[in-house]
Length: 453
Image (cartoon, rainbow, N blue to C red; front, side):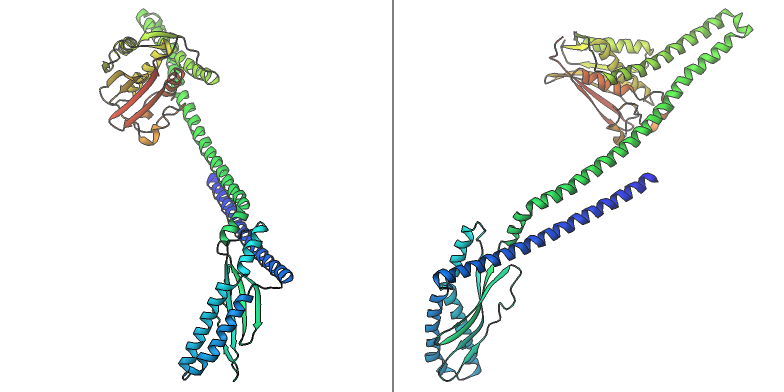
C-alpha cells in the first residue's frame, strides 16, 4: 500500500513538473516572438529614418510618379465612361489593382531593408506588403474616393513599419508598409533553442531518475522476496538432515538398538549420509559467497571435449544409480579445448541433476556437442516440466527458483544455474536457455576453443 501511494505521489509530482516545464516553453516562445517582432519594427524604423535623412527619400518616389501618370489617365480617359454604378465599381477595382502593381514593382524600400538588415547581422528573409487604405482621384469636377481594407488588420507575422500619405497632382494615397516575417517561427526556434534544450533535457533527466528509482525499488522488492525464499529454502534444507541426525542420535541411545549391531551400523550410516549432505549444503553456500567476492581461478588443461563429457555422464549415471536415459551425440571429432576439469564437470553435472529433479516422468536427456565457429557448443535437452517464459530470463540469477509447477516440491537453494553461468562466463563463454512448459528445457553452453593453458 505504501509503495503504491509513493508511486502515485511521485507520478503526480512528475506530471506537475512536466506541466510547469511546458508552461515555461510556451512563455519562452511568446517572449522570443515578441522580442523578434519588436526588433524588426525597431530596425525597420531606424532604417527608414536613415534613408530619409541621407537620401531624402522614402523609397516610393518612382512608384508615386508612375501612379500619378496612371491617375491622370483614369481621370482623362475612364471617368467619362461611367454610366452606371457597376461602371464605378469596375473603375475602383482597376484603379486599386494597377496602383498596387505599380507600387510593388517600383518601390525601393524593400531592397534597402534587406541590405540594411543583412549588414546589421539579422535575418533578411521577409516579404514586403503594401496595404492601401485610401486612394483619392482628383478630377477637376471633384474627388473620387476609393478604399481597400484588405490589409486593415495585420497578421501575427506582420510588422507595421510605417503609414505613408502622398499628395500628387492627380491623386492622394494613404498606404501602410508592412514586413511579412514568413520564417518567424524558425527565427524564434533558433533563438529559443538553448532554452528548449535545457528544459527538455531537465524533463528527460527527471523521467530517467524517476524510472531508475522506480526500477531500483522494484528490484529491491524482488531481491527481498528472493532473500526470503532463500532463507525459507535453506532453513528447510538444513533442518531435514539435522532432524534426521537428531532422531538417529536418540535412536542410538535406546537399549534395544545398542544391543543390535546391524541397527547401530544402519543408523551410523544414516548419520554419516546426512552429515555429508549437510556439509555439501554448507560448502555450496560458502563457495558461492567466495565466488561473489573474487573471480574464478581456473586450473586449465587441454582435454578432449567428447571424452570428458562421456566421463561426466558415466559418473553421473553411476552416482544416481541409472536414474535417467542419457542420449549422447558428439560431432566434435576429438576436438580439444582448454578448460578447468573440476568446474567443467560440476557445470555439466548441475544441468544433468536439474534435468532429473525437474521431471515428472522418466527422464530422457539428450547431450550433444558440436563446433560452432570458434566455440564448442554443448546442448543439454530434457523432457521435464519446463520453465514458463516469464521466469526464463531469471533462472540464472542467484537464489532464483521458479515458483510454479513441481518446483515447490523439489529441494534446492536456487544456486545450481547461477553456478553454471558463473563457470561458463569464467571460461570466456556463455549459457542460454529455451523452454516450453510441459515439454522440457534446452540449455546451450558455448565455450571458446582457442583458450591457451
